[in-house]
Figure 1 (cartoon, one colour):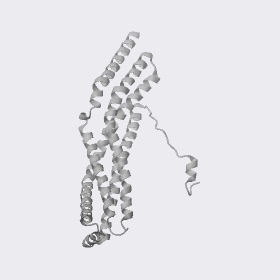
Figure 2: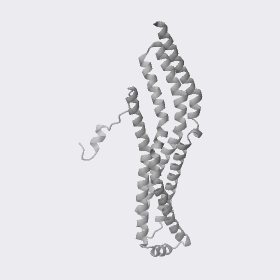
Figure 3: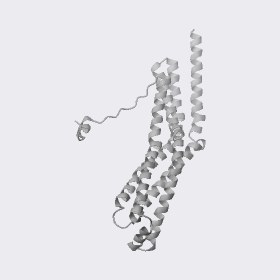
Figure 4: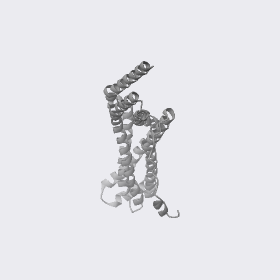
Length: 272
């Protein structure tokens, strides 16, 4: 009986050593190379290009609408200018996703999984259930961390594809309207040139304002879509992985519960 148990222990230890070495010397190199994830990087690059174009269109529109006679366009111009902060946040999230693909690959397969295998080897030799649980948690965490970005990109590709055509059309339309105003302004420093231009266009100043207000609405919708695809879906994928790991292995990964303090809650008007 003791011989069987010892042989079983030797086999398990040998398998864990092999898994740790393969993860350290083979899989880590594959998982940390950008060339092995062309689809993921192409999708993120496309999204980054779209966000950059939207930022440029927003800035140009805000500048162009300020050229209109009077102060009627000032509120819309200010709202357009305020959108740049949201685009910067989205751009940062996209860049973080790109970095996470290779960083998490290196961290998961070069560090966490070999360490987890070492812990499981110790748990097998010394029959320590607590160590075994720690090793399993570490492996689950490493795989989940590495899979978040590719999985979220796959989920968001269809959403991005459905909105890509409308976003590009909006960018082109806004560029055309902006260029027309800028060309009119470039002909002369006299405000009368802009006034003549807006009178020739259907609806005059009001018509131009309506165009840029429509642009503002469409840009706001684009921001909502990009926040969902760049932030909300990766978080949802993370939550799904945590639930799946708990379902398959029984290992529970706790997430810190952030609560508002009672003092902050009471300060809100109408809430006691």
